Picture 1 (tube, rainbow, N blue to C red):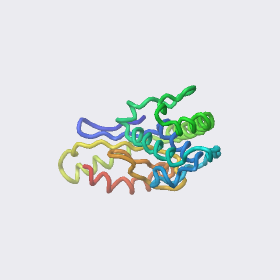
Picture 2: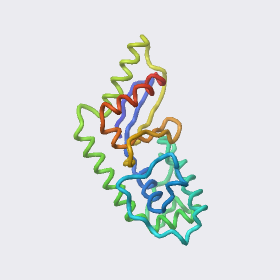
Picture 3: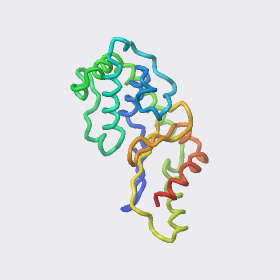
Picture 4: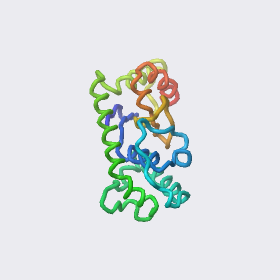
Length: 198
């Protein structure tokens, strides 16, 4: 995780395993239109898994409950990880637990590959991935002739199929890899957000 900030403000950037797994499960079960509907599909899409025998309404509700817990960094830290062999995190979400039994190995492999790609992209950038954020905040403080207001912003960089950014929870924005990798487009997207926060 990358962190930039001061005592007044903090911006983080990450590609968290929990969100990667969740979006892999969502794609594999064909829940894209029902769960976290504002987020487009992931790319590349993982192979689908057989779920027609599961209660899809219950599965969607359980997924949404899990997503609510993991979408924000500060609540994600207190959520148990999705781990075999029993997937205890889903002990009260039996449809989701069954999906995990069927899809975990492929979902975990897919998520691990995407995180590795993110880390390679991260290493290729210099000086720092969050230098743009720091510069824009510093420029805005100079324009206003004051220090920034207090805020926190968590940027979750995920392999979404089209460029963009989506608010998924207070203080949390999912940013597509394609937007994050385009420095100028990222700065143009971030500038009005910084103006509103600072």
